[in-house]
Structure formats: structure tokens, C-alpha cells
Image 1 (cartoon, helix red, strand yellow):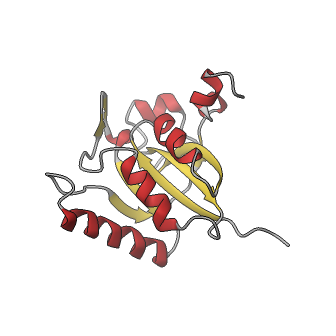
Image 2: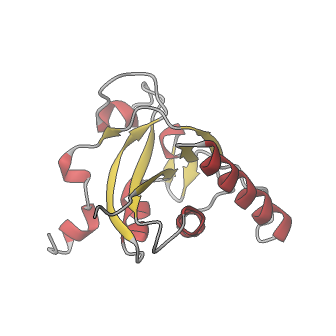
Amino acid sequence: MTKKVEIADVAGGCFWGVEEALSKIPGVISTEVGYEGGHKPQPTYLMVCSHVTGHAETVRVSFDPKIISYRQILEYYMNSHNPTEMNRQGPDVGDNYRSAIFYHSDKQKDVAENLIQEINESGKYDKPVVTQVVPTTKFWPAEDYHQQYFAKQRGEI
């Protein structure tokens, strides 16, 4: 019997921190950092940081929907960065650090849009959520040294 796996692609600043936060959630099978939402094939970190590709630093999350829902993944994601800042997270500035949810289905799109609406109506933030909800595009895995960056720095892998 094969385990059903679903995918969530999210961008919210430097992918190292977002990946670190999402990788620890029960039900997450794996995470991979990469580049999505741009227009140049086979982008590299240097190209993306030079703002010539249009890509966002993105985390691809593979998860078991029997353990955690897509909405719960997005709730963790929204808490892992400031969704009211479009092209900035902390000291990181630029379109590659934008806040975006790349949906894989109409159902994912509806879940993302409903969650953003609920957050905005809750008054949690002084400013509205600016996270883009856009269709998934080609996901380009980042260079190996970016994968599980913080775990590697701690000597865990």
C-alpha cells in the first residue's frame, strides 16, 4: 500500500528559514528548496539573487494528508514569515523574497484564498496580507548546499 503524498509550494523570504520551520511539522515527509515563479530556465542562486529571472526562493513541502492538511501547512507557513511584506523579510529585500503560495489545484487555491481572507478579517495584522496566490510553475531545485541548510550547519546531516 502506497502512502498518499501531497505537495505545497510556498515562498516567504529566504528559503532556509521557511524550510527549517516547515520541515519540523508532524506529517511533513520532506522539504526541498528551489526557485519558482520566474521566466528563465535552470536558474541558479546567483541569477535569482541578481533579480534577472523573476523567481522566488520557494520551499516544496511533501506531506501526508492523513496526518496534516494543506490548510494546516499554510497556517504554519503564514506564521513562519511576515505575510504583510511583499518583497522583504527582515534584512532580505527583493522580488526573490516575495510572499507567495503556488497552488497545484483549484482546491489548494480556494484553501489559500480563504485562509488569507480569514487572517485579514481577524485583525491579526495592522496591514493586509499581500501573499500572492498563483498557479504553480516549473519548480527548479536549488543547489545542494542550500538543501536543509540549517540542519547541515548544526551537523545533523
